[in-house]
Amino acid sequence: MPILLTPPCPCTGAPVRPSLVQANERSRQIDAMNARDHDTEQKKIKLLLLGAGESGKTTVLKQMQIIYGKGFAEEELRLQWAPRINENVVAAMKALCDAVEDLELMDQVVNQTEFDSFQSNEAMNGVGLLSPELSLSEIGPVIKVLWNDPGIQAAWEQRSEFQIIESHVKYFEKIDAMSDPEYTPSEEDVLLCRSRTIGIVKTVLEIDKNEFNIFDVGGQRNERRKWIHCFDEVTAVIFVAALSEYDQTLFEDSSQNRMVEAIEIFREHSTSSWFKTSALILFLNKSDLFEHKLGKKPISSVEEWDDYQGPDYVVNPLTGTHGCLRLGLSRPVRASHGGRLLPRTCTPTADGQAPDAELQLQQQEAFDQGKNYFLKKFLELPDDKQTERSSDVYTHVTCATNTDNVRKVCCLEIYI
Image (tube, rainbow, N blue to C red; front, side):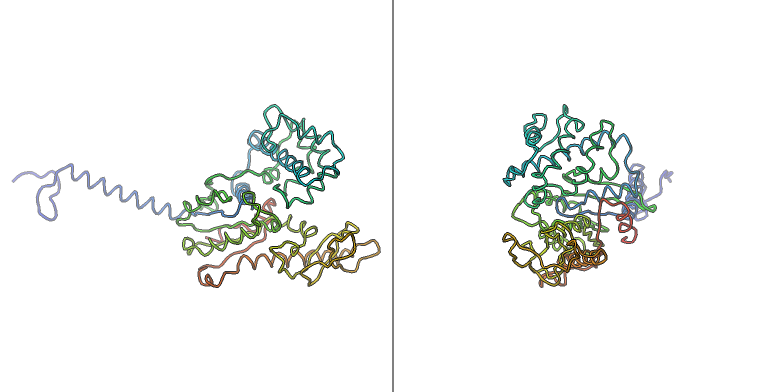
């Protein structure tokens, strides 16, 4: 009887070649490794950030890096973020100067020399990007003069008619500090910085010993076709929409209102079969800009929202002060002040302002009802989709540039 070096085949009893035994063992090891990898992947939490362009998705991601990650090193702030922020400042002023010309506001420009110098500066290219030979320390003083110019301020008041990042007003307010050659950006400066997301950006964070794989995707229309590559096995979707953009149009389509676009995108994806088992989280973002804009632009004055019936907290066009509240009326009434539309107002004090306590109540009421109006728009579904949203929607009003606010609403462990 021959000596068998390997166990016989359990089916036939015939000897098994060593090479086959090795192959079977290798197959078993691969199966075990695949099983372990599968278990590891199942424990990872996949978070998807969705929303239209400039809604604040990337700012939310930066906040997560600050809150749950290592934040930003000083070298990273100086070498990576400072140049981007400087370009943001120059591009914003370039957009304002171009708007002055396009909106025919040149007659209101007082500092004509600085305006012409800025517009003709050959060291800038494109829409105002800084070239290597031009620093913000050189051009910052000019930007400061222009920001305080009546013509630029007139253009800023009409900013819904052109493309500009509204939060960059905070850069203009601290232009002196930013013009210092030794300037190092703060975390707030980084959060305000606009950096368009192209393609799909993956960030890995460890939160409470859980691995979060966070995917930030470009929000503009030509980027959305790439979204589907991230849709498989998503634990939670955070959809970010900017409350303050109710009067603005898309960068890529000036005929489409940004809020209308955001609502349509949210309805489409919140009813998608891809996310039937995913947590749905809606961030109504830029609440600080929304609150400020309510004092300038009544919601119902925008054609898309003329069904709004709540109060508007607006600036008194005669005194320039706040405290004029239109209660329960959807439209302003026409008055004899230069043929302009003026709001019905509350009873002012002798100096033309509402009492402080009343003022605060009015402002809060206008904010709450405006926010609730848009929240209802997001959550409403057309009749043919009433049964298609299979999970509840967690909703939060956010200011993505405020770390404390994001820290409170972004307790990610509650969604997993």
